[in-house]
Every structure is written in C-alpha cells, then in structure tokens.
Length: 259
Image 1 (tube, rainbow, N blue to C red):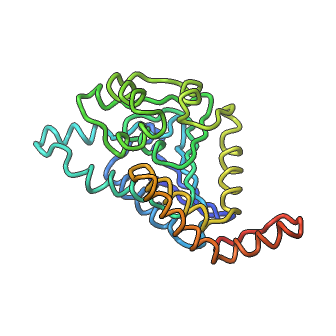
Image 2 (image 1 turned 180 degrees about the vertical axis):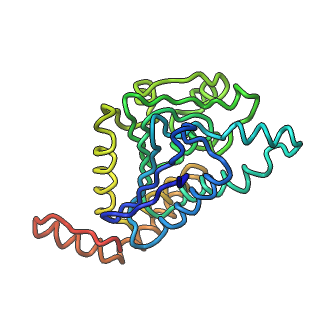
C-alpha cells in the first residue's frame, strides 16, 4: 500500500496520507512520500492543493513505534525534524498556490502542525486536534510555534502547546483554527469544492498574497507597504489582471488562467 496517494484533477492536486491502520502516523517512508507529493504539486499545471487523510484520522503525527526504536538504539530523533518535517512544512507554507487541509479526524502532534501550516482548513464534525508535544516531553516542531500563534494569538498558542489538551472541531472553529465545520459525510465534497474554486482563481495573486502575509508577520509597516507595492507591480502585469479588469468593465465574470 502506498503511504501517500497523489492525484491531479481540475488543476487540484489531492494528497492523501494513507496509513489508516496507524491513523496516518508518519514514518520516514511516509514523510519521504509526502515531501515527494508536495514537490510534484509545485508543477505549473497544479493551481491548488488538497491535503487530507484516509480512514478515521487526518494524521496522528510521528509514528511513535519507529521513534521508540530510534530512542532505544541511541539515535534520538534520527535527524527527522531537519531532514523531513522542516522541508515538508516549508514547502506547504512557501508554495505559490493555496493549500487546503480537509481535517477528517484526529490531527495530533506533527499532524496538527501540518494542518496549521495550510492556508485554509475545513474540519469534519468528528475532527479532533491535540498539539500533544508536551505530553511526551517534547517541544513543538513542524512549525507549530510559528503557525499556531498566528492563528490564535500568543496566549492561546501557549495554552494549547503547554497543556496539550485535545479539543474538537467546534472549539477549533471558535479559535479560528478552522474556517468551517461540516458533517463528516460532506467533508470530501466541501473541501474539494473549495480547492476547485481556488484552482480556478488568480494563482499569481494568491501567491503574492501568501508572500505578503508571511512577510508582514515579521516586518515593519513601512516594509510591508513597500513589498505590497512590489507585488502589485508584478500582479498588474499578469494576463489575469488585464482580463479581469476588462471583464469588470464589461460586467462579465472573469476567467482566470493562473498567469
């Protein structure tokens, strides 16, 4: 069985974590396959990415059986944070197209971090989140220290990371971690509809928006304004902007080609 499934349809790359018997926990093989899938999704023909899990979990995080074997052998983390998790999360965050997480069940530890790294998150009513790191005496990884406080604020992020208490989809919605909670049977269709909508949108403008948000999070107002000006200069030269402006004046619906 492939640990990660990858397919492209309607310019949407769908990536499915596929170890349902282990709640999609991440082994070295699974992490390698996930990074390969995300790298494939960088292709220009892909205009949006949908990330989800098979079975009853989104992703339970690190496979602790494999991790325990490394500990017993004296290998510690065996380099997996820098070799696997960091490149995966950076690829999601820095990808020049929107990434949607469809959180179908448990998202714990690094699995929760993967969801936090995506641009948009839709949750099944059965979804359950847990940062989990402190429960096994670890610091957060996979970008949780960076992404979570930007989603919920510093105080809430400290609470969620320090206490590590699980919480359900409704609280995730209240906290702003997810944008929508839907019945379990509707999740696939709702998440795909959102991904297709994004894939039909102005891809270059989405890439510029993601870049602007990342930069503004750690820059001064003056610096953010200057980058916005640079990004607008780039966007105004795109075919999508020209066609959309013409469509607006003609009172027509714009058709975006992604460039």
